[in-house]
Image (cartoon, rainbow over all chains, first blue to last red; front, side, top):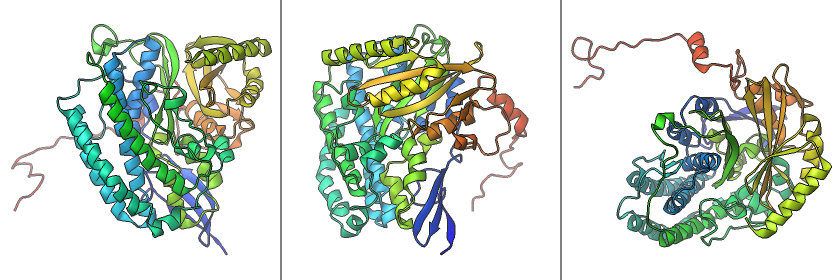
Length: 368
Length: 179
């Protein structure tokens, strides 16, 4: 049988972002696969060097489209570590609420993305409708729907609007009522189960070989390797939450983990509202005009747990008004490149989009 | 940071000092330690660290210190069990920069090295794959993350400057026709 070259993306309903996976198939088995990025390259790392520290706040959320707030958080954390700024206690709790809400947004997006490879578009429509309501809440808090620019070095940009607590908690009460419906729709659905169960395995050796983190790692290694647990940031050491783990990682495990993580995130948000103290929500990063703010010399790596794993910035400051260098560690870089090259071969052609989705590859953070 | 973690760290740091006297602890931020090491020690230290729990290579990244005529490469390792991060930083000369690949120790380094080759022009000996282009198709200038690459000048040279002089209203014709 002869080999045929096919393009999965950039224009493909199963592809996330504008990248392309070049597939060489024989029959319907993938024989060779390569991720070909470049169509989404916006030159973020160079551009960050040309913006002021505060100017960057408007730029960085755009690195990852589905989950923008992780960028603001790692940037703010890194700058605070270099400049040794202590932020108000209340800001930590507000940041946690924002981070967990954005994690839920990202998980909804990737659960919804199961729809196109499996043909069940209902799940995507439901998820997008729920995301939309959540984005309305974000709009009330931050003034923006997609890129919030809310977490800034020194705290958060402004106080939560009055009455937002009730709105968020009501939303989640309603959403929790709907979770069984989602589970019935996706995880008790024989057509989806046939595609997910015992398919697209990720053994623990592969996790270590590639450097996969996040849900992929925890579902294979069986240990709670979550940055929130291992090196807690914000106030994650003050709240109680479980991290789901398993030792058998198939597409089903990795998908259902997202639902469990959504439930745990809601738990964190409720606790954060209960424990949140009053007071200020930000301190000034430096004195004087914001365009002339400087950060002392130093370098650090700041990481958070994103929906796809460890996401971090390596930040270097030379004491001037602009960063000297910022390097982005996209959480899905390892599985996106080496994973596709080494472990996508062998799957069926129709499972290639499912591989890409359940491994949690997010193109914009790889090709930034 | 717990006390047991502190003692683990202290014991480990002492071991590291004994084995690699040239490695200099540059910064200790609690759970993150930055070491400045010599390029010739890199593989030994990486192999030692990988066997002592730092099983994950989080990333490799480069920094261009143009005034000192050096590139800095930072190898970022994480130990999920202890929650300790080690950043190993090496410095190499800026003209004809070369360093040995680490793909034989951390397989995941392959694409990080390829990315650095593309953006800084650093050659990784032993990783032929890294010589191919990755993000920038048919790139015809300096590697873009070098400090002497000026993105504005490149853009002005490469692309035609276009001026827009739109005329709105009845004279220029309405942009949208309404029936």
